[in-house]
Length: 369
Image (cartoon, rainbow, N blue to C red; front, side, top):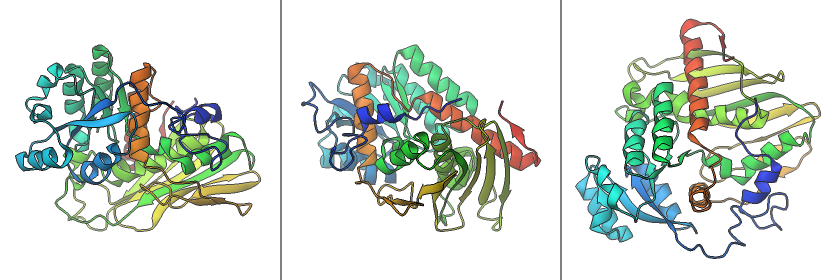
């Protein structure tokens, strides 16, 4: 029951740092060695909120195999602003109602879906039916059925579907996976992972269950869930969970904080948490037979670092994770090879998160076998 995360040989092919600074991995997507691409893959950003504005669009300017070719937005003022800022032609600007017209636009190869969780399926399906590949932000959707529908529609269209698991392209997380796989400290036995922060604006969509699908588990807990899966190299077979709410007005629809435990086939146990109340939870630690290793912070857009029980630091050079994931997806399209973060990876997380919620609701352990 191995996860979809790469082994060391795969890392060597896909990591982006110079060999001198990261000898075990080589260069991310071999960017330092690759010649200029014959063409760049055109990305259209669907949803121009904070993430697109401050992370994804700037990252596209750093990519080697991609370009910002178009946008999809329901706000004419934003469309005009982006048109001027990024020199986007009128014919590559769409709204949510005329996306189907992308089918006639060869400038756009990929639609990057960056909308609230519950809208991912509808937007992904529209993009696939317009003949476009899709990169969709995590979590993939809010139900297992919708995740499967997204996978099916993209396969039917003959297009790839990738999920925005940017930490699969982050060197320090990859280094921790290497330490686990190579058993540097022996077999991993226990993993602790969590992510939390005090959430602000009480009117935002993340606090509305119909749009978010849940609370901090869906938003940031998924990072802790992913960490336990790629550190263990296995899929959990059992989960148990509990939630808490101390502010029933702000958190009337969703959990405020959640903790859960997972058991894996080899006997590894993980203790996980996610919170919209508690600051300072931002990392993971893996405990093995002869020591431990971990990152704190582990999940941010930058500044990721960690330690090992032998005193060594885990402090590899930072990369733009969004640029790395988009360049990798572009190469998958150019080379007609599958992405390492396909829709099936997002579906696996959704199945586990739904079991976590079921356990919290019923008070029972839930089997995933």
